[in-house]
Length: 241
Image (cartoon, rainbow, N blue to C red; front, side, top):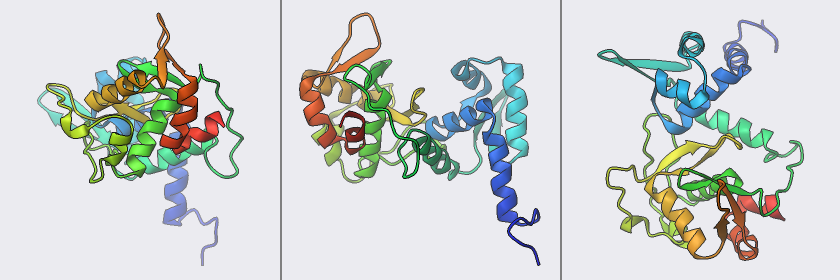
């Protein structure tokens, strides 16, 4: 009868195999990007990670062999996606733990008004952006990403968007996707992109909660923002309290 350390135990073998793959920064980041943002081609992944295609190809082959990544071919194009939708929850939990968001993790360093937020293209990123995304998912305004598609579905309760100053039913994305998950480089968790991401940031600026810093991607959280944003975004409270 096998014990706790029986190498034939399927659960133990699965967990240790996953841990080996996540121990490499490239493979970890590939999985994080695919789980948050949906399917990517090799060239898209190489650009996102800023690595060469041959180097990335070796890691993708290993992830495929481990059953973590699947590939779909269409003509000469190959698109990679996570093989199991549940991997995103595992990766997000690890990122939150590493960022000090779980009991027993290292204390989270508090940020000042200049270190809370920045822009990613035209939407909010950093702690502020991640907090927006978390609040929208927790309140049922957004369906969390599962790695199967690049566009996020809106949830049944849109009230969280309204409280942030945006009517999602009035926003038209046009050729642009309405809502996307964009993996945050500093937090390793998703922030909100797409047309709704832009609208949320515009609403924050218009309400005087944040101010762009000219010539940079930084956003300054104003005194009003420091007072009002933690009530709107509970996960932000620990960063500014």
